[in-house]
Length: 269
Image (tube, rainbow, N blue to C red):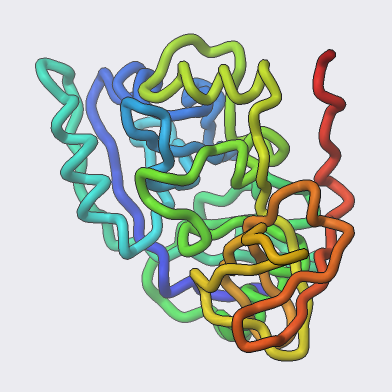
């Protein structure tokens, strides 16, 4: 299946300094972006908190960012502040984002790449604005994303969420070898010291609460509801509550469904 994603937009970064410019700002190694290889990265505050995340494509002459449409202008403005004397320009381009999964063939006429987060996620492509003939609905992709427990920008809180809480470390969204970038210090510290107390996990329930709703267990607040569709959703939940039943303020209950890829290392003694 494949679906056009109407909540996404595309920004182009052009100029001779485009790679080095972005390399010092985002969480992943921009040099790895190539015509057939996309990377997933985040822009952080100087204090290391999440602002937005996006996929970075390269067509050889431009970096093309597949970004949340709701963040497109914010990202263009913030990135532009760091241009200084760098030879770069940042502007929106008239391309749409299409995602494919379940063995859907990648288009040979568009800039496309395997989704860098998980092989099961499928592929993403940047296409001219012409509707695919047999595209599924965006809700079909949403069900696919939630089944894999892949984070969405709507799950994260600007200037609050840590990258590792949203599983960027487990989904290939952080480079530990590229050197400094904005917010790198806190991200590295939480990684090497094992300071992550909550993670984004899949949850199920017959009546899932609205995003932002606090979740409770044993009389304590242990999580916050994220996006959901039907009986499947995501939530930030403290690790000690993963094996327990969670309760929303309206009395509805939720069960944590930890995805197979969410394997945590034992904290060093």
